Image (tube, rainbow, N blue to C red; front, side, top):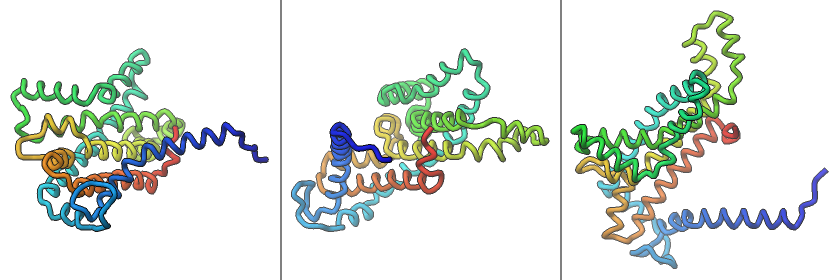
Length: 267
């Protein structure tokens, strides 16, 4: 039996639709402008063209910045995939009850502290120990720190919903701790690990403040290169760069859907 929708149901659906339109409109506008045939970012568009994507892919500065951002994001996702998973296992399974909540807050702190404050603190720290920002280690540590909570929280959520009786059964049949983790625990929490790593990759790829303060001399991430470009140019190449970043983000969501399924992310 289907329930008849009331006036308030229609009003609520309209409000939700308007909110989605408000949130998606800037993204769709940027993508649309990347295909403009005009010389400047302006509406109405002066024709349709792919010339700005050609200008993007032949621009060595954007190419180098994109590769640098990709490497930073890939390392951040890989490192956090290990340490974030281990931290989640410890907090959920082994941390004393009286300290568990405090540890969860501590692990999530990079999400709560403004990114610019984290960047300034790291900048002072690296200069105090004599490293400064001469090498890529500073910016890499910053990216790992800021994206760590995404892996930790996703894996922790997966562990909270995990039935440990499977592990107990494996141990009772003679499996040691490592074999039990590899054959039982890890496959069960895989959706959380994959999702967390993909979130870490996407966030790291687009980080601005951390990259601005901690980057080494002569290297720029893609967001920084785009920022520098817009200071002196206002053509649709900038929209083409933004479109590429949007495509990468949507590709990450598609990977999540095809590998673990978006429905599996509901805890």
